[in-house]
Length: 157
Image (cartoon, rainbow, N blue to C red; front, side):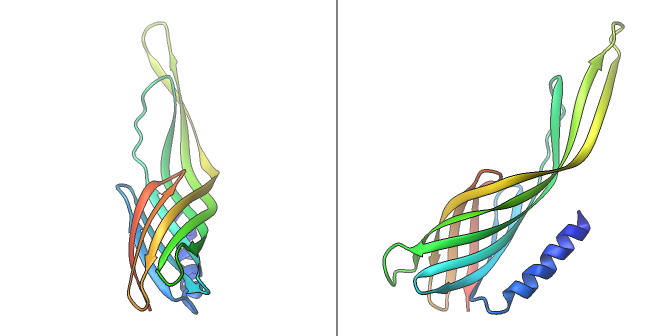
């Protein structure tokens, strides 16, 4: 997972060249960074979200989610010309570390657990709203199927 995160950060640094905004976003268990450009009343962006899940083993068969890394692309259109208010859609992929735990009960009340670990690939998609000032603050609210609602704050340069 560390190698994937490092490669993603390197990719983001390369993508920063030629971009006009940078935002940091988060919610209770997710941290993200997004960069892109605004031109011709359209917003183009690319971002990374990192989530750390803390699921407990409850029930007969459970899937425990571990660290999750999502990479996505974003496209937005300006709702009112020269207002800086954009309606966005985004999509990408999410790499999630998962452990499947299966409980077995013996007649003498003993418990046995079978664990299978691995990475699972999930699609990520969502919508959002961004406010982008000329040479100023960038504010975004996005909602995705994997991370819920995230709030972003950044700067347009």
